[in-house]
Image 1 (spheres, one colour):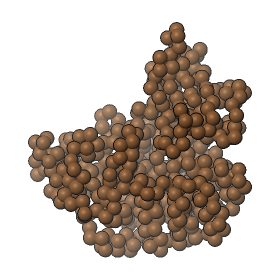
Image 2 (tube, one colour; image 1 turned 135 degrees about the horizontal axis):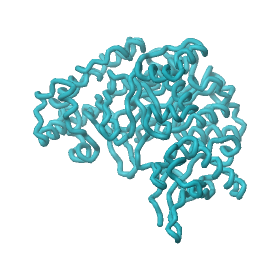
Image 3 (cartoon, one colour; image 1 turned 90 degrees about the vertical axis):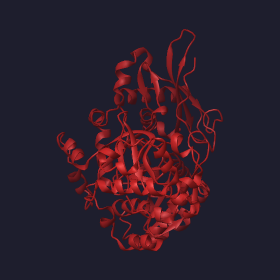
Image 4 (cartoon, one colour; image 1 turned 180 degrees about the vertical axis):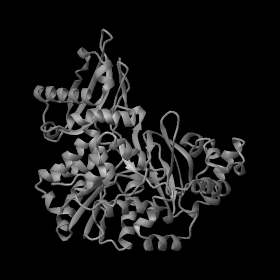
Length: 502
């Protein structure tokens, strides 16, 4: 955990003067770090003091990790929604934070997240890890184009600030912030891109794909800009990474993109590395091994994390907890993400026992700074699945079917899946798919998409292949026009599932 709290000038100087290798410190996974954080929060954060008192807990009794593991979980419902905002800050003073961001979540109800500039430096280290290890941006003139929404929303301003911190540290990095305005993104890339050795787009995966596809249609020469991209917010398939990479001229998929595992609650918790991407790509081609390792028939986001920055735990139900220092410090915070943690040694041993040496595979592409950090994998929220004949159907399974050659040109990648019951009470898997701009529905397209999705469901989801009777496996695909207001309204956070209809 970061020290709590640290004077701004001292924190800035430490970030600027400390090499990345020392900031990450993979060997310093000391249990006393999280215990120190806990005691500091218990002493200085009024809401957490009251929370512990209501549970009859004396913070002085928490002396070991075993003690720490007995502490009650904190959630939005039992903690963040029960106290005034200032009570979550140090000494109950909202003014100790210099900025407030907003997240809407799945309910649309805004949540406010105060933070101080010192909180950003440990998050900037995650960006530094990507820009240095994946993009070699220590030596290349780089244009970072922030494509997250700006304004009060958490992603855009946070990303812009972290990239500027890297520039302050000496990276030849220049930041521009068109936000999620597609025409402006394309304008600035074409105007400024030729002045740099590489261009990095930072945004949500489906939006970045839309930007890239629109640019291709307008003749933007993506490959000339040596494009890289940083993503957050959604699980995507390796087929998706390949598809986007092909369209921008990517030749090194382990080094040309990276995804962040982040939350509005606590910033970036972990990030993809060349090693984690190499491993994930191998597992994408070996779904049986992936299911053995992760316990589910879908491929999660796989990242590495710094245990000195975020302390992860896993509940008996298979959901993640983390503890970390922020403007609102969080202790054993539960956000309902399904997933797990795997140590660095455990991961390599699992793969080597199955004949795959990830490090040797990466080294064939040149020098790679392998950092022995632990892994965390994340499936996302379980309510994004539908149950069909007892099989859990995941959006990730369907996505791969839409990303196949030919089909991917017809669709945006957005879809809504639901289970509908007919007049005879027979269940059917129905998938409404958004057509790309200018594409029209046809029976040939519908049939091709249904067959592609079926093939991937059978390949990737063993529950589907074994639980669902063969006569019910073919999904019913309905093609919807681009921006259909009932299924794909413009400007609204997309949901991949709907309640079961009868």
